[in-house]
Image (cartoon, rainbow, N blue to C red; front, side, top):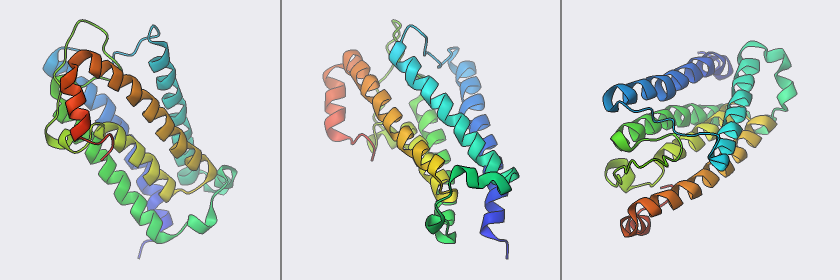
Length: 204
């Protein structure tokens, strides 16, 4: 039987590469091809969203470092201050399933937004549709929920001080971004968005 720790050292690098390729590269390219529009609308002029995006990018660098040390420089992994009483097989297995599920949730949510998908707040004259069906009938922010769940999954697979901080920062960062996006959607859709807010939870 394969040791769960050994399996995770192989799984995490494969997962993070697939995550980046499918949820970012493939997603943006397919969107641009289908809708002839780049969904990446964050600019330096939008100071708050740009700041939150840079924070997310920095967090992602720590995620990559965590995976690299855990998988390839395991003898130095102690530098990340492992939480040993959480380093158990059942939690690692749960973390793997959460990582896989969060990836599927995020991709399906991206697809269901169709032409309304944006990375950031689109402050142009374009008025996107308010999507309230499918997954969006259960959660107003399933893409962001998927991102937070992926941080939780990573923490369970590699419980340490860094991944705990990453999980907390991911939640704080995503919540702050959502507040800005909700203000924008209210300005865009008015009472229709307020009605959607009342019927559908922010997370799930």
